[in-house]
Image (cartoon, rainbow, N blue to C red):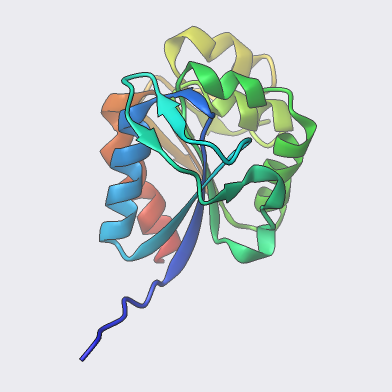
Amino acid sequence: MKYFIAYAMNALIIVANKNFRDEELFITKSELENYKIKTIVASSEMTECTGMLKKTIMPDMLVSDARVENYDSIIFIGGMGISQYFNDSAILSLAKQFYAQGKVVAAICIAPVILANSGILKGKKATVSRSMVGDIVKEGAEYVGQSCVVDGKIITANGPSASKEFAKKIAILLLK
């Protein structure tokens, strides 16, 4: 007899093709799956993605093929490579669409800069890797020096050590 896992929610995880933060991806993905949240990894290329610590993952799809209606949340994983998306109009639009539809929008490490640049952090409490505080503040975010911050359906975290808490807060919002 075969058993099938019934997933309650779908989470779209965006990573850079090179230099994503390994812990942020793999811990977040694993924790969400522990909560029976299906994770779909997307990147700009359908080639093996390599983290800063050299772990690899094959993306499930291209970011350009992502449709908001197919997912309950979008999660941006940090690491130096994510800066390729900071001013990418398609990525910024995707973040805005998820937010406009009341879905969970999350970013960790330096990735909250994407949320700030999309305009959705204006007037919101958020955190980010210390090196990028000025980037989110200039776009209207209220910087909070905590490891993980939830403001409505927006979740931000400041780096790899916050990965587990970040994933848990995403799961809590999704499963409410």
